Amino acid sequence: MKLGSSRLTILLSVAALPVLLVACSRSANEKQAANVQSVPAAASLTTATPQPADLNSTQPSKQASRIRKGALLYAESGCTNCHFIGDKGGSIGTNLNNEGTRGHNLGWQIAHLENPQSKVPGSKMPSYQSLGLHKLRDIALYLNSLGVKGSHLSASLPPVLSPAQSAAAVVKLGARLYAANACANCHKLDGQGGISAPDLTNEAQRGRSIKWLVHLFMHPQTNTPGSTMPSFNSIGTVNLRTLALYMNTLGVKKHASAPNTQVK
Ligand code: HEC
Ligand code: HEC
Image 1 (cartoon, helix red, strand yellow):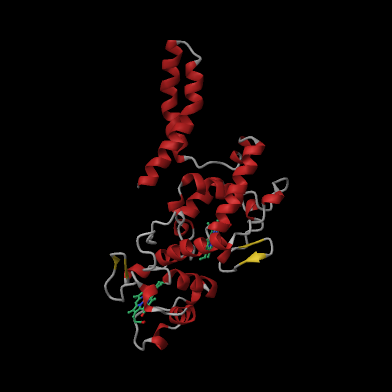
Image 2 (cartoon, rainbow, N blue to C red):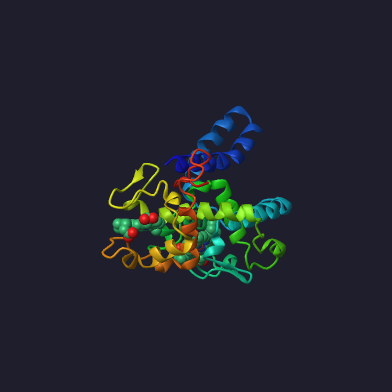
C-alpha cells in the first residue's frame, strides 16, 4: 500500500507538471480554467499505463543510461537464474532476447515485475515490488529495448558481476524465492512465519551442506520420511542452489543485515 500511494503521487505529479507549467504562463482567470481541466486529466492518467512511446520521450543519452542501469539491475536481481539473454541464462522463465517486440508496454512490465501472478496466474517468478518504482522503470526500459531495431545494442547483454556482487545477488534472490514459494507458511524466520516446521532463523548454524539442502528441497521425504514439506523440484536446480546458499547465510552476521522478505 505504501508503494501504491507513492506511485500514485509520482504519477500525479508527473501528470500535473505540464499543466502547472502551462498554467504559470497564463493570466489568473485562464489559470483557473486550466486548473479545472487538470482534474480529469490527472485522474485519467493515474489509471492509464505508461505507453512504449515513453521510450522515445526522454533524451537519447538519458535513455541509454537508464537502459544500462536496467541491465545492471537485471544482473544484480538474479533474473539470469531463470531467463536467457544473449547466449546465457536459465530456462525456467521466458527467453527475453526479443522481449521488446512482444508488445508489453512499460506499465505491463512494471505491474508484472511487482506481482507476476497478477498478470500470469501461477507464475513461478518472484515479486520485485520492493525494488521501488524508479528501479522497476529502468528494468522495464531495458526489457523493452531487447531485440528492438535501433536500440542500444551494446547495452543489451547484462553486465558480468564481480564475485562480491554475485554473492549479494544470490542472497537477495534467495530471499525472494523464499517469499515466492511460501516457505513462511510452515517455517519461522526472524520471528515471522509458521510453526509447523523448524525455525530457520539460524539455519546456517546447523552446518548443512549445499548438496544436502538441495537434496532436501528436491526430495524432502527421503531426508525425513513422512515430512510435510513439498518438493520444490519445479523451480530448477539453479534456483534450489540459490535457496540453499541463502539458507547458509541465515544466522551468520546477525546484526549486520538479517535477510528477510523486505529485499531491496
Ligand atoms: C525463479 C525464476 C525467475 C526469476 C528469478 C525471474 N523470472 Fe521472469 N519469469 C519467470 C517465469 C516462470 C516466467 C513466465 C511466467 C510469467 O510471465 O510470469 C517469467 C516471465 C517474465 C517476463 C514476461 C515475458 C513475456 O513476454 O511473456 C519478463 C519480462 C520477465 N520474466 C522478466 C524478469 C526480470 C526482469 C527478472 C529479474 C528482475 C525476472 N524475470 C526474474 C521466472 C523468473
Ligand atoms: C508445508 C510445510 C513446509 C513448507 C511449505 C516448507 N517446508 Fe521446509 N520443512 C518442513 C518440515 C516439516 C521440515 C522438517 C522435516 C524435514 O526435514 O523435512 C522442513 C525442513 C526444512 C529444512 C531443514 C532444516 C534442517 O536443517 O534440519 C529446510 C532448510 C527447509 N525446510 C527449508 C524450506 C524452504 C526454503 C522452503 C520453501 C522453498 C520450505 N522449507 C517450505 C515443512 C515445510
